[in-house]
Amino acid sequence: MWELFEKGGFIMYPILASSILALAVIVERMIILAKTKIPKEDEIQEICRRVKEDSDCKISELIEEKDTPVHRVINSVWRTDGDEHAREKSAGIAGDLVLRNLNKRLQWLAILGSLVPLMGLLGTVIGMIKVFSNVAKAGDVSDISMLAGGIWEALLTTAAGMSVAIPILLVYHWLSGKVDNIAFEMAHYGEEFIAAVRERDNRR
Image 1 (cartoon, helix red, strand yellow):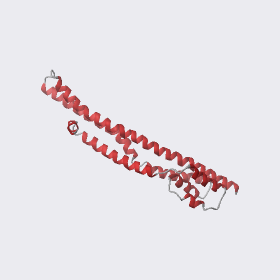
Image 2: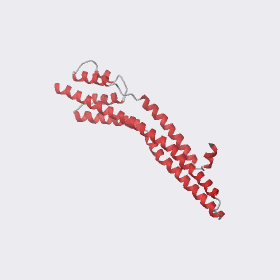
Image 3: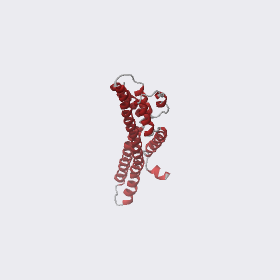
Image 4: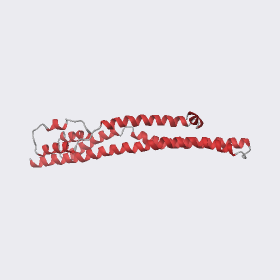
């Protein structure tokens, strides 16, 4: 394996470095997302029910009981004084802050997933240039092994680049899907809570 790596040339080193960086980002983001919980629908429905009833059962404590993205959004709504527009704006700001933290460094995976194949292609082009340069110097193309040997070595970087890029992009889209799901839940439950607060205000 190491022999193949060395045959690929110097471009193999930035490809290797990119794969290590991507792995570090993937592990770190997976840990963060694993810690990010979405509350059960019953929990939010119970909060909304008590808000509608204008119950004096310490709603603030119920909202602050858990530190989830959804609880942060509805907490920002609950603490906002003003009309519905102000509450919606507050919910949007709280949601944006959560998504900003969840999306940290994810763009690195998108960049690396696009850049690594280009590195591999560059390595192949450089290798092919060397092959044909050596053939031109030798002045004899009757020995096909001279071409075949150089070409397969040049193609190693393309294979390495694609082998690294494909799993990076797959994991990137998987992690992005998880973030999108959290964003949907925040928007969904945030709208439900705003509607509950609106109903409470209309009864007063």
